[in-house]
Image (cartoon, rainbow, N blue to C red; front, side, top):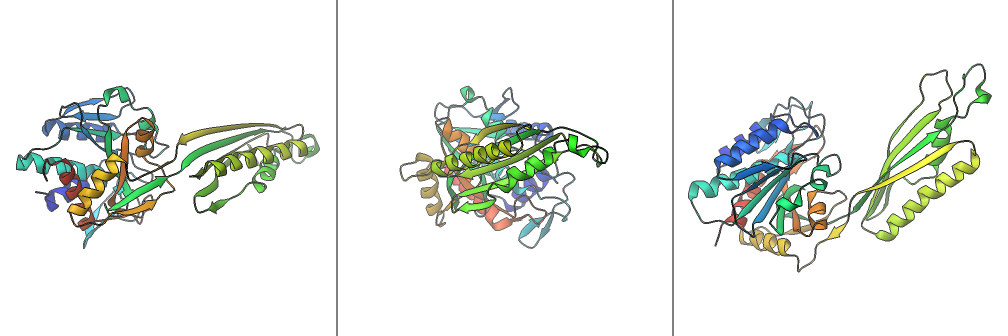
Length: 360
């Protein structure tokens, strides 16, 4: 039986362990200990992802990620009514420790009740928040399962991510020519000025219902009285439409070409990389069928909702694993106003438990 007090305590214990991206060793050690106590064989692949198995040739995969975003150090959670919140100076860490806690509670419950359950693989990845890096480096040769439930969505557990976009990151590196800004500025070529011309030609924000574009970082120059020689522009664009992605790549190329004509002595290098690729669920998807059937059995109506973000589910699907992403009771992700709704967290644990029980 799912135990509310134990579930909440597990969640609070986990969020008190700092685990910003790249610093997941402590949380991985704690999760390894807990999974071994539940009878799992646990290993870490060469990248540091945690992979646990209780045997079997066709296991169901339960997955979440270990890392959190900043500010996520020294989290001080507290319970306010039916919600868990931070003290307002940090995130809460519900993304994705709600998912981790719900999985652990479901495993605790079936172990405690000694009921038959499916063969399982539990995958806790690292570096998810910085571009699904852990999943993209996951050693899939160690994975046997072909269906995965990823506990990493915002909102209640019956909110299913129906589709996710392709994400393309870009960086433009601009080299101008330095000069003394007060003595001989005419001898310089401002890389910042070139960057400004490029940015002015690029779109910003929401392009359409399924497409966004963002310049997220600009850096360059050295000191106030020197014409800046180097500048970089870092951004991203996302869409579920391949035509839109192609069009945006074309806009970047056109903006760079126009800047090169305006400033023929500048050097501009363009780097684009795909972080993850789009998917849309369909009625024949195995993991989706499994989850929607189980939700209805719990009296929860599945809600299909498109997302502008990506999860490890994108990577799993790219590697031939049917993956479905469900909500995990977290609200206000990536902000200091983040909160977890305890009854929804209970629902998340109940779904996970029902998924893994045989004849639940």
